[in-house]
Length: 369
Image (cartoon, rainbow, N blue to C red; front, side, top):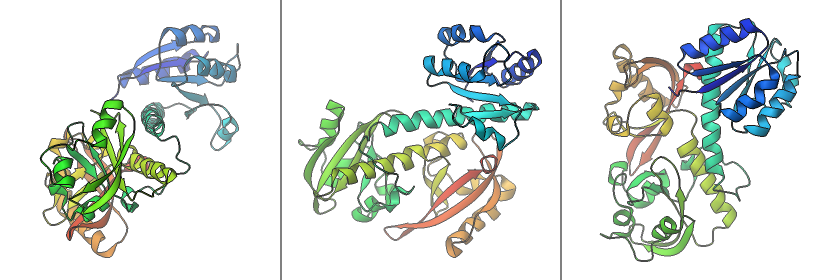
């Protein structure tokens, strides 16, 4: 769990004590402030992840307090403590706040708001970082990179393929295990070394997008290759292969879709080999939710992800979904720390080189409301 710095602003001493106690018990660092005039000094002296602001302030309007916070700390998440019942809090929509804590306060309310706000902050930071690299994108595409007809794949700076969309596998005529972990020049160029005119090499050196039209022996086709350097965990290169006539707007839209799905998926997603019942890929949210490092989840037996009493029926339900294309089901998984979690499973069938696979969405029950 991320340890956060939290500031609680209220002239209600009991409210300060209750909120601070719960937040501290969750392992976070808490500072309280009962004098609105001291807010600016607190904000300038320390960077806070979350600031709770009580609407019932006597010495200063809470709107002004939030305005002061926003001038100094744009990234700080502001949570408004209000006595208004939903949906009346919509009257505050013009105020730049991240969430609401509605009185009467309870320990669970405070804990849930803190956890939800920290999740939102993390997603917002990642979203801003990724979307800033695609300034020409004009709209959101549907949330699946596998809908894109062009090959798109991700490599690290050593040219090892980390991820690829289904079009890449189909065009190569290769399975997941024949692509992931292999050098891109071996897969796409049938070569034992990096090409001299490799746009990936130029993108890595310059830190900017590089493009060239190259003959891909592995695809038996001459294509335009656009390579975008990305700053995610460890860094890497995103490759987009397409016909040379594809417009810049289309390229930007493709990149937006890729980044949103592979790096911004808000729920855990697994790719399952339905013949061997093994995990062959997992997105970042899945790694975090299952509390497992990549090497401890890839190629793991599917049954080991569920609590023992649920594993057989869960696998059977997944297979049933793939055959009937029906709705999801509720079950329990067990993460790498042995913690059991209630989830809702939705499985969709896909096929790569005549090999049946399943894309499995693992939705935490607490996110479904």
